[in-house]
Amino acid sequence: MKTVIAGAGPTGLLLAGDLAAAGGEVTVLERRSEESNLTRAFAVHARTLEQFDARGIAEDVIATGTKVERLRLFGHVSVDLGTLPSRFPYVLITPQYNVERILEERAVKAGARIVRGTTVTGVRQDEHGVEVGTDGGTHAADWLVGADGARSAVRRALGLDFPGRSAVRSLMLADVRMAEPRADVISVSAVGSAFAFVAPFGDGWYRVFAWNREHQVADDVPLELEEVRATVRAAFGTDFGLGECRWLSRFHSDERQVERYRTGRVFLAGDAAHVHSPAGGQGMNTGLQDAANLGWKLAAAGAGWAPAGLLDTYQTERHAVGRTVLRSSGGLIRLALLHSRGARLGRDVLGGLALHVPAVQRKLTGTVSGIGIDYDDAPRQADLELGGVRLYERLRAGRHVLLAPRAPEGYDGRLIHVRHEHCALVRPDGYTAWTGTEGDVAVALRAHLGDPR
Image (cartoon, rainbow, N blue to C red; front, top):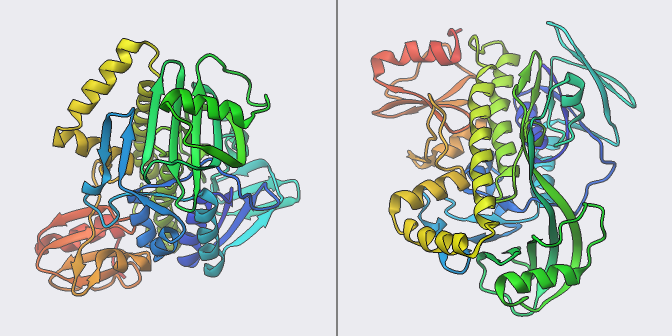
């Protein structure tokens, strides 16, 4: 099976590694000629770390950043991630380029080919395959995945609309050092017309988002560090001794989602399919979850055992999640940017009270971290100890894991059997496809893995 992936960001690289590891021929086309060390994404949430664990790279990623277990919102509201039901009860703060580096090393080691400095110019497809035109020639493939960002050339080539709106204009970003930082927690505050967000990278550098309601300008208007400093001071009452700066940028944030994630043999993933406000740091994570969902399904199609309709479940499962993230991140940014003093006071008081209710705390942390997001017919499966080897270590083979008293015949290469008194079938992306009794194992395997051989 040949797959072309447009975009060598985190989404495209995770997918490339999965497909190459499954034996597919994978080519990744990247517009950028060189890797960038500048990035807007910086948060890796618990569910994403679980996906990395299922690929044996979680510890490598964790080593690049700092763990943050608590979020401090508006000076009064505290969100505790330490209660998450996961091996990773925190958010990891690390620049996106660290994630990309590790994912690229994995993809290349598995056999994926990355072609930089090339732009997609057109897409043609029929029932047999896809032809991808670029400024350097054409590439023939069985499948094409557009993971090429918010301005996706693949999406444009398909003629798909990207409906939505601008959520917030003139956001300021900066990576800075601080002489008087708070403890290593993520802090958010908004006072009057000023909003600011501060997160520690753990190496002495801090990521700052800032916004001034009274000074909203175009993205290309030059940004000076003093503007960031003044906005942080207005929001927090201090600028934390904000000093040396290695990066400044101004941008706007959109909320958009394409209606169809699949068009024939072409799929969209990550920012090419959905963009959100930066609140909650869910953008990169949602794209990585798209890739984890799509990869094993494409591999199954390439291996010839995918049940009818399996590839269509990418749309049904991931479009719904994208819509949920759009709403949750949009709600968070609107709460942060409330204008009236009375509304902000109500937010702080009621938010503080609500988060003392365990169910509310679980809902919020579960949504932001991804731990609480399930599919209609496949809930997230927590890690399990299985005879001295964890479930997510078993998933590193990229196959389904069957828990059952006896091993089935005819499914070699499609699943790993673990002897267990209870029966369950766990998908390669860590969601439970089926639970039942031993007498129903054969029927369940036919439904989810096709006929035995």
